[in-house]
Length: 343
Ligand code: DOR
Ligand code: ZN
Image (cartoon, rainbow, N blue to C red):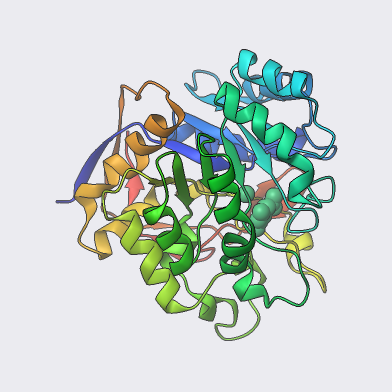
């Protein structure tokens, strides 16, 4: 099978940024995906419905002519988010509310310090059926960085899912065996998104021939056994696992720095990288559901019509891409993708 026809896929976790950065990256996602759940960690963060809708307008305005792409907007949860804002979010069609533990990742400083402080918000979200999208890592400096997801699940996520039994929850960018097992064993309404890097790379990629800042993201890449568990979940056909690239562009200078930013740009291969991983695992027949159905079903959105065709034919990846007045180094820079989008 050298061509693959998918239903147009959805990217259930995407960073599009704003301004010139948005203009530089948006076409890559719009070429591949019909819709994307767009993360709200802008500066300042998208903490109000008005800000989210205005951001949605800027995204639409930045689309290439003729593109058919719908941003699915989200709200950035803070300890001060009022119930009225959550109800307004639901009414305005926002698809979820993102929980960043304060200090866990890029632009998370306005996030949540104490989970107990957002119980009132979670009560409302449960009531109105507005999903909680979780960056699942503790920030405790005493917890090893490679263990932060597993510890977050045990200390915080499992109790939260039990305490709010009807709240729909996405463990974003799951990276560990513990994360996969948690979702598999969880009550209905709990799901996880999976990135291309956590499917295809283990933590060795951070040190391959030297320090590799372009393989640094959060949650950080894990041991091989965890990569294998994440891949097994993705190709299992289990509807609780779906595609979310977490494509997170940062300027080359911000990545290649004494304190490099976390984030991997993958939107240029947003479906191709998954096709490679599924193909290598002999599971190409499972890609359509993972990429095009499970996410839509979780979010209660209509499945896309239309198709996206891929061909197994290598295509080179440039060393860098334009990024406003800067450059952006994509995943696989200087290498190649084994699949390409043809229509
Ligand atoms: O690597 C990451 N980059 N992880 C995140 O959670 C945020 C993202 C970003 O916005 O750059
Ligand atoms: Zn993200």
